[in-house]
Amino acid sequence: MKRMYAIAVAAVALATVIAPVGALAAQTDPGTSDPNAKADFHGSIKVGRTHATLKVTYNCNAGQVLWISAKEMKNGKANKALSKEGSSKKADAWWQSHRNPITCDGQSHTATFSMDKKEPGSKGKLVNGSAWVQFCVTNGGANDLVLSAHDFVKVKA
Image 1 (tube, one colour):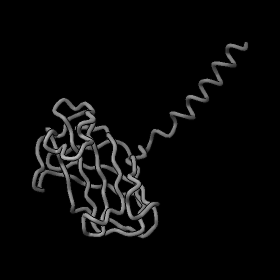
Image 2 (cartoon, one colour; image 1 turned 60 degrees about the horizontal axis):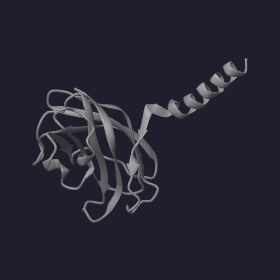
Image 3 (cartoon, helix red, strand yellow; image 1 turned 180 degrees about the vertical axis):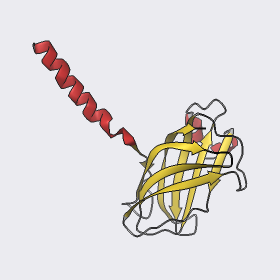
Image 4 (spheres, one colour; image 1 turned 90 degrees about the vertical axis):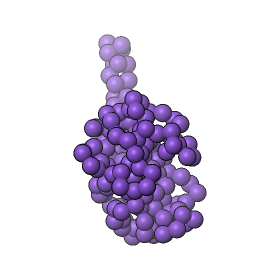
């Protein structure tokens, strides 16, 4: 009886840790101008013929321009090299966009954002696996980073 109780307690504890898997809390860089800004990635990147989408819940007090990017290796496996500066050169696929509208008013917003290969440097084909996603909001210039969130996200091609 004690063994069954211990197994039940362990199962509940494990479920408590695993349950919040619906949204992937992206790692947010602390060196941004908005310390309360954050982003959570929901589900997977859905890849179509010409563009890919990712659902994100975000919060920022200010910001005018969003850059969203997904980089992936040919085999689709998560590779820490993709998280390094200049890794787009090593990536076999790099889809991005600066063209998605964003609302930074201190409130939480959930939206689906698109990426494609229209912007300079973009390349390759996203495949089933994991891509390194970057979600960055600025006030229009690269020197005023309001929100910077990143993590590996599952890709459904």
